[in-house]
Amino acid sequence: MNATGIPGDGALVRGNRDPKLTIGTDADSGKICPHNANVSCASCRLNELCLPIALNKSEIHQLDEIVERNRPLKKGEHLYRQNDAFKSVYAVRSGSFKSYVLSDSGQGRVTGFFLPGEIIGMDGIASKRYSNSTQSLEHSSICEIPFSQLEKLSHELPNLQHHFFAIMGNEIAKDQQIHTLLSSYSAEERTASFLLGLSSRYARVSLSPTRFLLPMTRSDIGEYLGLTVETVSRILTSLQKKGFIQVNNREIELKDIDGLRHIVASCSSS
Amino acid sequence: MNATGIPGDGALVRGNRDPKLTIGTDADSGKICPHNANVSCASCRLNELCLPIALNKSEIHQLDEIVERNRPLKKGEHLYRQNDAFKSVYAVRSGSFKSYVLSDSGQGRVTGFFLPGEIIGMDGIASKRYSNSTQSLEHSSICEIPFSQLEKLSHELPNLQHHFFAIMGNEIAKDQQIHTLLSSYSAEERTASFLLGLSSRYARVSLSPTRFLLPMTRSDIGEYLGLTVETVSRILTSLQKKGFIQVNNREIELKDIDGLRHIVASCSSS
DNA sequence: CGTAGTGTTGAATTGAATCAAGTGTCGTGG
DNA sequence: CCACGACACTTGATTCAATTCAACACTACG
View 1 (cartoon, rainbow over the protein chains, first blue to last red):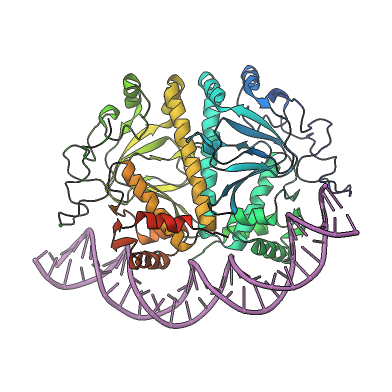
View 2: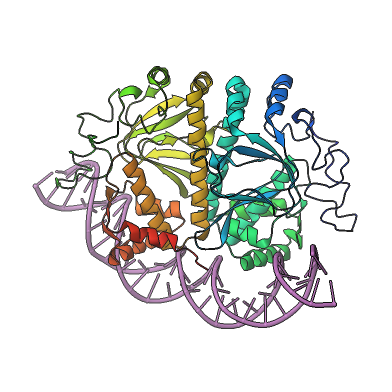
């Protein structure tokens, strides 16, 4: 049942011509898991990670009925914008997204990144409006799940209700970790933690946990971590000099995961 | 239906003998809303703010059945500790709480404060373990809601399911605001925003939005906002000098709410 | 091919942390 | 009721991590 023969490489990424660079982010191969296929939940390779988890065959079919598989989004397209009426949550099928808010006067602040199998838009549930804008970072595809229908179906399927509570609870727990990260970690600790986080999220979808392409800019990372672009760049360079990682543009290789973990763990030992 | 005759003053707080100081935090009067009364949800003065919202009479009764009203907690007592098995969520009936994590090596970091009518413990839903410890900041009482029963009841009462989704969604949206606050606000902006947040949370439970007692220490505030005690102290003094607030120990008076809002709004105007 | 966006690196500046030395407040037990 | 000790808070002087400012290199795309 575990994913061994899962694709995800075998094609070039971002137009890079070097065939060894078949790492990270979703492939454009179009063979088995293309962006735009009308895969059903039952046949989706993410179904063990996404909403269908813990549902049985017939339940998955019912979920399938309410999922809308929209056309893929081009890089930079918005899924929704701040203050739009909340209608749906979204599951990332391929590609990646960032959420951000515009801080009143001008520039935005990134509040989250979303990789395949992750759920977007739960911040709008309470207020019935999205509290941030969400934009694709590359060519991406998503499943739209109209929330009112999800609620209705959750009412019929206790498994789904349970699982959606868990997904939301997970989001809450994750946000609290970020709170701790932002309130007490140094720039280097934040960056190391961020890379480790990405690593395990890639591992979750059976991509390499040690070698991947960053879908976001340094500036996005900085906004997310509460640092400036310059600081992010400097830290990455310094982590490379220290031998923890190998950076080449958006390409990242984690060479010493335990070393990175150690950086994060050794926070404020006083 | 709106709360006008609600108590909340008329008694002394924290042993202070000056009768004019009948502000903030819950009263120990024991007249109508004491800490330890076995108030039913139907008769609880918080029922419009807490879980029962949007439930009808018979539904509230069913909710009532699963709520456990434990003995009050003394200042400093723990509701649960990090890594305890997750069993229940809790609604604050009176008093206040803080959640914190112990950062591996030593000292903690505060992740949240909870006032009457607010729900504690949702971070444990996904992992089945609480991801932080939660401790009362003063003599407090809570309602315990065993989560498995809440789930079961939510399945029977669509209103409750809907509302609990909303509560969790609200938590997520709130956490994201804090993310923005921590990643881009200055010390003064964070502090102003914190005070305004407390103000509206007190207003929500019909306490004065301009005059209240801080249930937490400067150090708690600092940990929560990612600042040191010294900085918090300095900022409060400086806000007082500028005429925005009046501070006396734990007693706070917001003298210029719009001024404070302006401090928060004028973030990074570049 | 040129241009806008993205990323790097260096030097100067600064906001908040740290270090240090106090005062104030509260709860306890004599 | 007062004295004591522990903790909470304040204020000042100094330091430092990260920002800001500035200049430049790289890349990618129309």
